[in-house]
Amino acid sequence: MRHIAAWWDLRGEPNVLFAHYNDLKADLDGEMRRVAAFLNIDIPAESWPAVVDRCTFDRMRADADKVGNFDRAFEGGAKSFLFKGINGRWREVLTEGELRRYRHRVRELLAPEAAFWLEHGSLSPC
Image 1 (tube, rainbow, N blue to C red):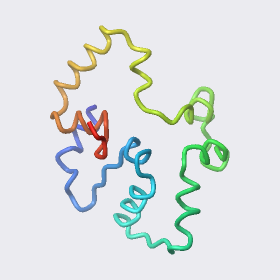
Image 2 (image 1 turned 90 degrees about the vertical axis):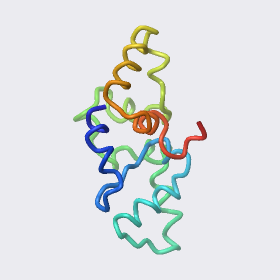
Image 3 (image 1 turned 180 degrees about the horizontal axis):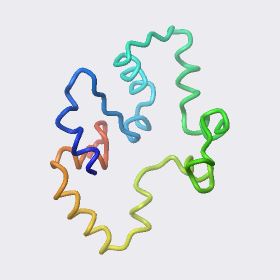
């Protein structure tokens, strides 16, 4: 949370772009276009569908050996890092007391808008 807190006030700067996993899941094509525009990368229209396809969760999981060396950083390698492709699984694991401590710490460290973004992203219907 300190990382988000440190960057939150800079999010409008021309050289800072926030990207959220939930937003990528909600609109992969649109978010990839946003990132490409930010980086001033021009992808030919005819190539775009294949580029987006390579970035889907299922495709990255299938081609994990091409994506990176997950075994170096994650116990269980790609199978544990590229596990389900969903967010919020921690809610099923943490106790109510741990969740209370988490919420308390969020209130201490983050502005409400930053906390919302961290948990949901920008495209969340919440």
